[in-house]
Amino acid sequence: MPGERTVVAGVERGARCTLDQVLAPKFTERFLETDAAAGTVFVSDSIKCTSLRSNPFTVYTVSDCTDSGYRHLLTSQFEVHVHGRNCSNKRKRKPQWDMEVLSLFSSHSQHRTECRQAGSALFSVGGLLPGAPIHCKVSNSRDFYFSEGDLFVSETLCWRQDTLLELDLLCDVLTGVGFSTKANLISIHWRVGQGPFRQGHLGKLLEKAAQSDSGDSVDADEGEAGRLEYFIEALFDSRSNNLFAVDPASGAVATVEVLDREQKDTHVFRVTAVDHGTPRRTAMATLTITVSDTNDHDPVFEQQDYKESIRENLEIGYEVLTVRATDGDAPVNGNILYRIINGNGTNDVFEIDSRSGVIRTKGMVDREEVEAYMLLVEANDQGRDPGPRSATATVHIVVEDDNDNAPQFSEKRYVVQVPEDMTPNTEILQVTATDQDRGSNAVVHFSIMSGNTRGQFYIDAQTGKMDLVSHLDYEANKEYTLRIRAQDGGRPPLSNISGLVTVQVLDVNDNAPIFVSTPFQATVLENVPLGYSIIHIQAVDADSGDNSRLEYSLTDTTPNFPFSINNSTGWIVVAA
Image: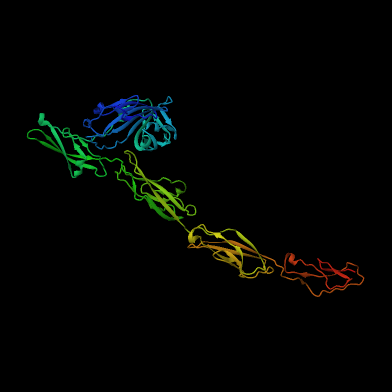
């Protein structure tokens, strides 16, 4: 054909690959050719729809690839749909896998067993796929996992020669270029082993069990009388007639529409075989076709978002709520298991029963540490054909407050100094206390428990402000110790009576000195020497500090008065 080739199949260039074999229906030999150098299968001539035995038809390619010490045998399946005038397309069931890969690595030792350590990479997957992988997931095997484009072993694995380990890989890959780029989901069945590369494995890889049962009948007559014609008719449900057809000549029963087991899983037909003799004779039989299940339904949660409120300090094992998901597939593909995807960190106080979906507490829930949780729950249907399917739902859990915290004072002891002449009804101190609970459980009220026997102090129950109520007298009481209670508004309330307030009264000079006796009298001889001590004058002052320090002096004395007084001690002595 002139112009650009129409390519229907080809090998990937990410790894060193050569096109080894092409398997296609015989009727395609007239219009399909293989370019081994380019690794492609292309349309070489015009196609007449009337010459197509089936539309679409399947082309298999077998590629031999080498990369990083591995040798890969890739079997890819391409469904070719021909469109045009007088072309009819019949939908075909999607194959179980889009690709099958056999990967063998050479042993580096003389032993027949080769091992790979846990966490080690085997080989790059991206170069073997028909596009750049966006995301891949391993199913049906716990021995392998996919990460950053490579296939890894989950635990230490050992291979003997001619033994294979199998896995399924589901990948979203980008195909096309420019604006035609799109993401496609492909499924790969992978076999990994060690030893020499043998073509004998090719037969196993290409074996497909995709043919429906067909019924055979025989006629003992010869010639036209022994030629049979077959008919089928649905029993019990006429819908079956639209899904199957019989070849009148061969008796081969084939599907004409895609089957859905979830709509109908059993089809019963009456088969009639008619010969062409005279008179024409018939035979009848019953054909029962059972549709096996493929995992073509995702689990579906009853809700996408679950919301629940719980109290803090619940007992371990408390049932919070139950999530439920259903799956339209048969039990083998609809056996749902649940797990919490983000169960680490703060979410580790919850667990889920994998079978029932019941979420329980497995640790203490404290609202003061975490007020709300968001759990991502996955439902996995455990299907194997072609692989498991899953769905997720979000669970929002809000923790309600419990009155489990008593108020705490901002200070262990409050100390305030108040002058004794302070005017009553004056604020002297602000007492504060906080409660980690919420709402009414965190509202704090204050009261004086002890130390206020004379009622000289008052504390506002709401604000904690402390006022002086009546006059203080330093000389009567120099210090007060008050015990304060902080009580929250919970039911029942919690209290803290550890608050202490020390009020230190400051002295004011409000007392005059008082002589210890009056009058003072003394007798002295006329011939005593100068400086002779005659009498000790004493006075006291009820104040303290500088306010009680006394100075003595003599008043109303005449010049040349014969006596003087010591200012500090109060001793009167002879001065002249």
